[in-house]
Length: 470
Image (cartoon, rainbow, N blue to C red; front, side, top):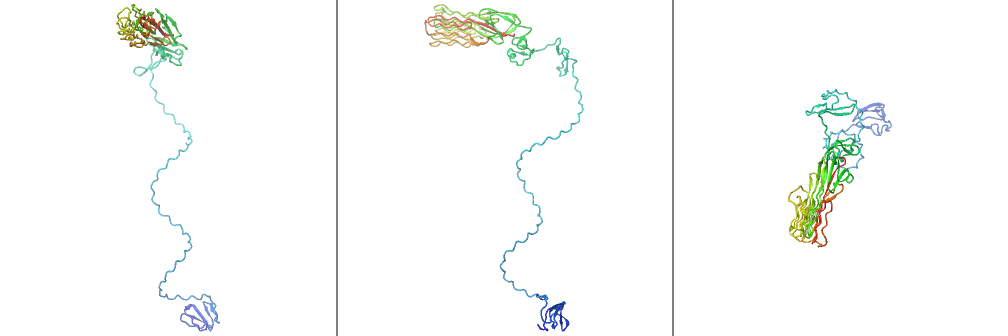
């Protein structure tokens, strides 16, 4: 570098020292730097021409901007730069609108019951209520509500709690509960001393702890064959022949069975005898009663002798008629029909009608219901006699026929059938007469086969029964 080097664009900030004299230079100034060059006191070029400053050189003043050049072609996009650091959290946005209500969920399981809370303090006692109305009556009187629905007492009905005595005064009465014997016997846990009115026996009775005993009207009676064991709790009197039901004391309502005797049967293919009338029921008895037991009607005797109707059995006002005679052929009468009676006799062989039941034997006089009609016949065969349980069977063209059924009774403790109509027999001609009715049943006799006699009717019976405590 020469001492006369031209320095352009240094401005007024550069001082040049040449020949020992400092000279301030600017743009377009030519200086002599033989003595070196310093800028703001800092050596830049030595007097020997060696550079002493920064390699970067001195920043020149900003030049005037040149004309904008044509935009170059867009270069290829460079590779994606590294992900930048996440920016700060933005401000929270505005709250959105509330969504639609969701469906109600299922109810949860019931929780365990909590422990009981502590008992609260007792409240204060309320005000005393007003006193009730004064109850009527005086000391020891039993108080009741009268017909005006007002409490009252009665001097004729008192209870003394010191003596435990209930007293019913004059012109006052005490009603007892009414029971039949069956209702009385159905009572359970009956206390000793219990008192009732027994409507079956028409007596007041007291329970002594084991049995019921009548008082003030002890009924005692005798007659016939007596039993206190054949029927539990009852005394039974059986009459198989005439006698008297003797009442020694008291009165009672008794049960009865009265059966008339059976009618005799016709002979020579005759009809069966009608059964004796059968009546059952109850009757109040306070005095002795005569007893009649009918004997069985005789059967027709072949040839030429007519048989008989049965006979009445009687207890007091109760009469059961005898059974009607069965019709016959050659029994001394031209009538083949059965006779009337308690139950009618069956017709004999040949055209004929059975006798009517519920009639006085041998008549047309009606009596209370106690039997049925005998069977009719229109053939060479006899018909069955009527019975207490049904009519006699009509005669068929041939063969044996039964009589009307009897009826059962358990008055003596055993179920027994009484008052059956007599059957007829058409087979075995000449082999023997008809069989008699069983004694004391009131059954009709059996009709005889051809050329034989008819059987006799069974005798009647009377049975009376009443509670043994009557």
